[in-house]
Image 1: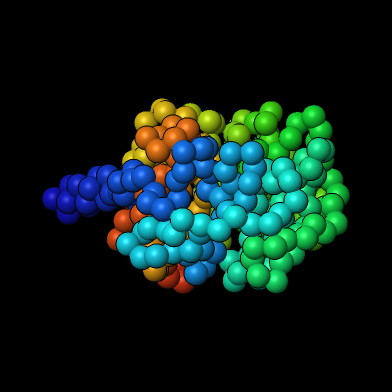
Image 2 (image 1 turned 90 degrees about the vertical axis):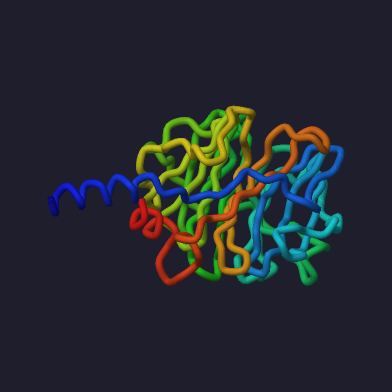
Length: 265
């Protein structure tokens, strides 16, 4: 009987839900295409819109964000990632050759390009997304390319290696606590567990997938809860940004998101 009870308990825990409802993000969307890119520790979100214009949105409570301020960046900002502490040191993909570059800012709106980070230019295969490249916490940088390959490198991010355990994916986002990755094929979101160049086989995130071109995931935390954002065809205009809150078992603690999910599922 004890074994049966244990089996039933495990079966129940295995059906636990990590992510909440798929919800259109209020305040982030416009009549053009909108793509979430980076979530700072204070809830600020950076997104790219239309012709790669960069915008900064600040958290307004109840998981809504203000209308946003357009950043004065160089042209053709394709994707961006920012240190979780909000430090003005970021990594971008930009330019005619789609190079991965440093950039800096004193106010989070006016940006100046820095040096190209060597080794990432796979022209004509251009970057489609970059993950957290958080120098302050020495987290790896992950870059996904249009041919579906993902590369990674530790700081100073100048020796990228291919991640071969994920298969072909067009976008990548990694939680700042590590061990949890969300990728996209351009039609669905997938999750993996691991670190560095070794990750588990991607599994579909059934809580949010509709098959309706879910793409460009971003991971972060707001008010002590994990947040997943992504883009899909919406009702505001073109691609809209959606979000999902982590369920109660995913609230931020000293344990990483991946370990919390493993414990409860």
